[in-house]
Length: 550
Image (cartoon, rainbow, N blue to C red; front, side):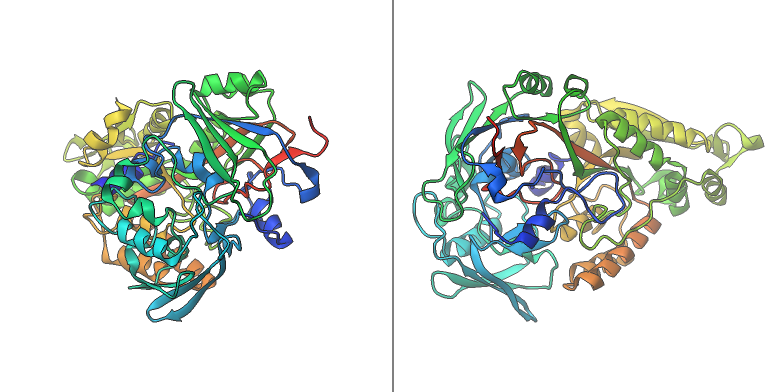
């Protein structure tokens, strides 16, 4: 259950490339999709428009339990965000979720065989870890071995379990052979950590609780002060790529209201904007993008009335998803959009442009009647054999908006005669005591989208014993649709396969996507190439202050 708890912990709530084309696509604040928010909002600027020097002070909510970004406790914490300027990969994700090879880390990343799927990686021989040792094929061999070993408390990296072997070809090239084709393969072709951190279970599991891993990016962690809530990053003296614009980056840890006050006082260049502190930042300069989180309604079809697919479909048709979108927009102060696909964000590469499920109370009532649940006189509760249809909807009592969303869903279902009992439960035990044991009829929280996440989304629906399937249902049709999409390496064909996934999962009526949760940051107007991104990797060598600014 360790893998499940890693992902669940995140449910409440991403080098240098001098190509002009890459810069435009990875940092553009607009997308081609018909959305109210872009996929990234970073105030892009060219090389000559960003000055050298300065310290960028950023606010973040908590200290990571470990600084190992691929540990089960690290991946679900703030560690990946804090360490992002210090780590790089052969693959750089752009704003729309597509990717390019980052020449700082690899000269080539190519599929050389499709049966079995084999990817050859030619490493940049200049690339080194923080201590000066080169990044080699041996690091990749050790990394994959550790990530697949149950003794390591390793987070689930997309596609890593599908790696059959890593064949080294000298020190600076290797081939990654997958035991099955997977569209998520770009996530599993480069080591996040050097061999020194993956050759030992003890070092991997406990060696990075108080120190950061060896950097291979433009910055290194130079100071960690828990007492003051400060983590300092400075330029990497061994960095081989373009000279980073900033002298240093300082992360300050604190509650949302404290970070907001610090930004207003000029003590931070950026602070996260949440429903709790939005009013305090009303006069700040805001940057907003579609976030990677999406709210949803999970329907437990394992037992009771919801075991009937018509009842589950009636519930989905009765819920006003558009109302949830409007409420989410109001809470964050920006206009977000529906999450209509269970796989991809609107505008993400491969987005099948699935239409949101439109509310239809008449159709919902008809489906309930078909299942034997009818209203007497057309009013009141629906009943079958004199028993009213009553459903439980437990939600965590956090400030995530889940309670308000649950209450709105209950009101929607009341319109078709279904009684919903909203139950607030402690957030710290919500998954352990409610969701994992399936002690609910309905519930609502958020999931996250990853650039290479098809395999993980499959686990939300199938198999029935998947540690992430909380629906009580599974089907051969669902598994077949996901497998077809995962195995498809061609983007156009994969788009069609994902559309089939959306059609099949909507028919199964187990998870109803509701709204994309926006990401909003208050950012000093002089800061360039920095801001919220749903999917893209920021180029930290280009983040800095506008030329001519103080």
